[in-house]
Picture (cartoon, rainbow, N blue to C red):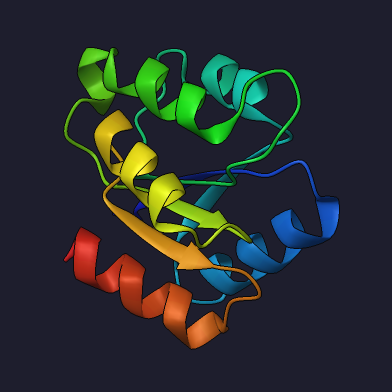
Length: 121
């Protein structure tokens, strides 16, 4: 059974890159344009992991993490922040909201896959 990853980023090019990297490594991908879109796509779907940007319109990454963690199906799944932000204060805020890990853009495809394998087993 393929693992399903929901990726949320307001940049179409980043979504494409993340999606391509995951799909070529055997993951199913659901793409969302922002946090609100991601929450709508979480509705009743089984996902194994969420990868989200921090800065997005409508609902940012922190808001998405908090909302996802409030859903029973997402309480314990890995949520990775994939963002240009690297300040410790932002990382702390992400961790407090429920983020599992943090990857700074631009990312290396191997780095993304290594994190996926580590948190998904």
